[in-house]
Image (tube, rainbow, N blue to C red):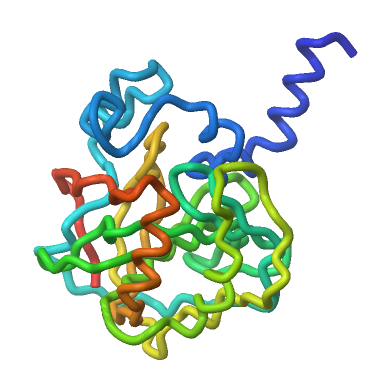
Length: 255
């Protein structure tokens, strides 16, 4: 097999996984020249690289201020979260927790979306009826074809988040590759009791801002302490790692 064919095969095999991790790819993010402030901030992402053009030209970008809802009979999300995370990493833009392949998933639209990773933003990126939240967790899933579904969990200032306590004890101080987790962390531990949600079509919230992402935003927030938010923020440069809300345009937000 020649070099060109070899790399084409790699892309074919791992295409779905690459898309599912495009928002938080370790090496790409460590070496990329984008950020959350100044000349490389969100308002300039679209001009930093031709690969990022969707960030400025896309019509269905995330995050958004969820409002002007359309009432809909949304079926429950089926959470099949049976495994614990195995890795944690600081990629310079966020803290990400990875899950083993084929061990956790959700069912939406009669389709299984495998849980790839969970990462965090502070302050929260999405707003709900112009309400701001202190932090937001994104549960990133992909189906067999690489299509993405993100479950967004809002976190508001309050008591310490028990599910994060052990995880926060292993926050990597530097941006580098993944580290094995010694603490037991299960995705379902973070979920609220009520799992009603809003739904809209959007994008990744970081370059390359790929569109066609199913966004499922849980209505019920969970608590997070000011100390936990501060510890996370310190690892990502001491400032927020949230992209500003984008125009809704012609999209419908279902609830």
